[in-house]
Amino acid sequence: MYSHILVPTDGSPASDAAIEHAIDLAEQYDATLHALYVVDGAAYATLEAGAEVVVDALESEGEEATQRVADAAGSAGVSCETVVTTGTAYRSIRNYVDENDIDMIVMGTHGRKGLDRYLLGSVTERVVRTSDVPVLTVRQPSDE
Image 1 (cartoon, one colour):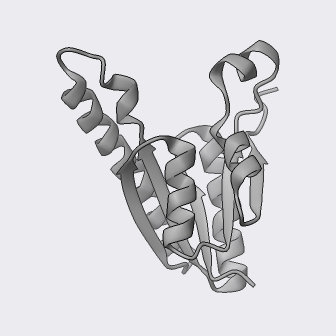
Image 2 (cartoon, one colour):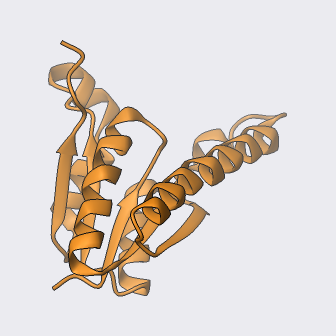
């Protein structure tokens, strides 16, 4: 049913919860897992000095985050491809889905409510609303 499963990651605990589910699904369906990290360079384009340093740091963070996914997948015997790209997160995710024949997306959600959700927006919510493939959302475990 699923041959290619995408798990976008930002290195957060919400992403970690989604990664566990994505690996489990990839293992069940003998699917290739794709770990994607998106650097939104536009958010730092207005910095007069240092924007390149910030983007480089985020790209390094992305390499580490996707490598953690690859390591966890490898331990489970799951094939994994890693990609760090730049762009608007939800658009980059949609483009990756289209360009790589992704069958399913597994994404973490922070579970924000109220004003925080409105002000910060939600990449996961945009992907859910615009995706042509199924999206499994995994809520970050509560600290309570």
